[in-house]
Image 1 (cartoon, rainbow, N blue to C red):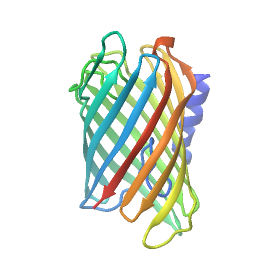
Image 2: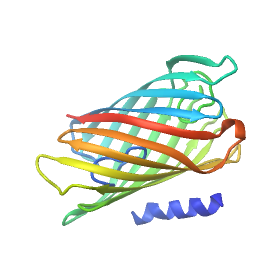
Image 3: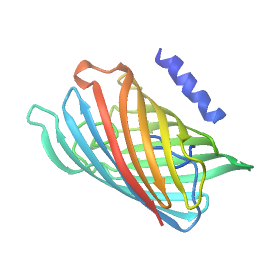
Length: 254
């Protein structure tokens, strides 16, 4: 089943971002050179092990209209049972993106972006995927997005490499965005998001397909995000199973 799901999500990379950036997915749309975005997206992750609260402070800079660099300094609080409880700095992440394809039309655009995320082992070795592993990780992927005034589609395909650990991951994402208000100036919009994440940990042979339902309010240069993520398919050990994740955050572009 997991191979079928991966093939479907991979196909989305070549077929098709919604108004406003996606919530749990990524976005190939860049807003212009010499601009900054400050944001956070808090995740409350509840699993069979316990609960973790992840609070990243993210700053991104666009040196040019088709390039982006960023850094994420995350704080993590966790209670995973068996006296595994604490808080502090999680794995710092460095982000780089380069837009290599852009095709614009009347009221629509298609774009493709190369992406890398370098995760530094600054967090505790908690084996929390994407949050705090305590191992170096290098992610390399590609994002494609098609956006119109009526809807948006975004997709991502990539591989996360952990040379000294066992959490190598083949990742695919697919998201749909639906704006509820007519385009207006100054910008004011309410967006619904329907986002899927497929993750296959190749060395452990663990697999999960997640679905996130989100809503976003955008006004001028500020957006507010809220989403809940649930597992649709989960082939993880029972002791590591995800119950749900709750996301809320905001971003400001200047």
